[in-house]
Image (cartoon, rainbow, N blue to C red; front, side):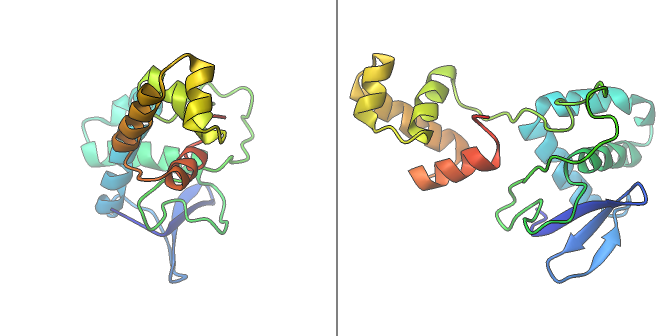
Length: 183
C-alpha cells in the first residue's frame, strides 16, 4: 500500500512527489502503486470505477495499460495540485482535492470521477445516526430525535465503527471529514 505520496499534474502527465522530496513521472512500471490505487478506487468509489472502465474499455486487451489509464485519469481529476496534505497518507487513506478544471460544469464525468461519491459501507439507519453523532449530539439526544431507544443508537454507532474501521468518535469525525461523508 503506497503511503505519504502527493500526486500532481505537470505537462498533462501524472507525477509522484514522495515524502523525502523526490519526484518522478507515474508510468506503467509503477505497477504496485497503480494496483493499490486501482483497488482503492474499486473499493471506495464504485461510481468512478464504473465510469472509468467504460471510458477506457478500448484498452482492455492491454490490462496493465488499461489500469494505468484509469488511475492516471483519477489522479488528474482528484490530485492535480501539490499541497501540504499527502494525497495518500501514512494510513493509506485517500485525500481528494478540488482540482481546477477547464471543463468544470460541462464534463460528463464531473461528480462521478472528479469529486466522486465515497462508498462508506454503513446502512441507511447507521448513516442517519452517525450524521447526528458527527454533528456532536449525544446518544440520548440522537435517540430522541430519531425515535429510537438509546440501546439501538449505541448498537448503530458500534456497528458503524466496525464497518468502517474506527474506534472512537474522534476517529470517526476525522474519517467523515476526510471522505466528505456529510457534505
